Length: 376
Image 1 (tube, one colour):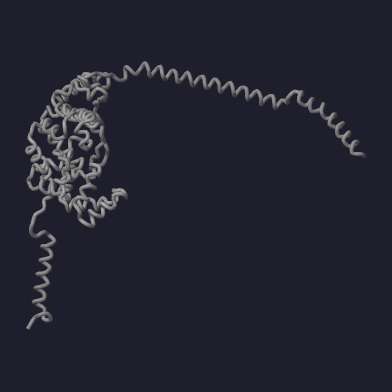
Image 2 (spheres, rainbow, N blue to C red):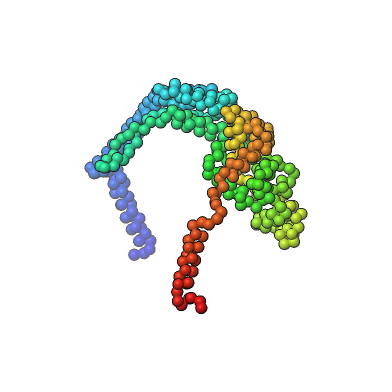
């Protein structure tokens, strides 16, 4: 068969098959296919109903919460304090917050430092399981919180809010590098003594030797044009540059060499003058916060009100305004408090020296009794 004849036969075969394919498309679906299509339609309808039910449930929950919210919690104001509490504890909250503000923060009740703060209050008894021995079994013992304990918690909340306000305000005290707690705990006093006892600064040694002016200076409260000249001796400034050699730039390497290798004080001072304050400042945040805590204690119940008036004051002037004391009096109180946390070390023989002495005497007596070691 020629090539043309083969092509004609193929075309005729395709023409014969075309009606069959069209008939297959137009033919009705089988029973299985029809059931599958019905099931798909029913699932789509079920999905739509489920989504609609979910939306109705969510809307119902929102309406219930919106209606129930006013009855679940209540709010009140005590001076400028905004408090959220349970409805049946509104009067109690007003009474306790009012007592705390009158007794511990007079003059602060209407200050804007508390305008943007919400205070939560809830007082309830607690059941605490305790263990009873012989025989062992657990019982529930009702533990109640005392009224003074609740007032202490309120006092802590108000103090924290005022502390955040002071630290967040652009003032002399906020730039003084204070810690976040103006009621300095006992642990800070212990650490402050260790810091000052080991500090390589002339002013620290003078402070611990009953020099109130040195204590005032080393806390960065009497800053002259170059306070590090008063804090550190030339040798201590040279050691500081050597310790911070990695901080200086490559362009300052010649000054570092002249300071550390050649011992030129002028080169050391030039490098130190360019350092950030936190590298030069010898006192820590804890030591400064202890001083502020003492000033607040000396100021009595008006201390916090005076603290909020010190926005435009330097740290030294602010502390004097808060405490009502002179720099010498306040520095002496700070120094006495730091020294009161000095470790209790006694001179003389300790237990180690005593045992060593006893062993030496024992061996000496044995050597005198031994024939092998006896002389003569």
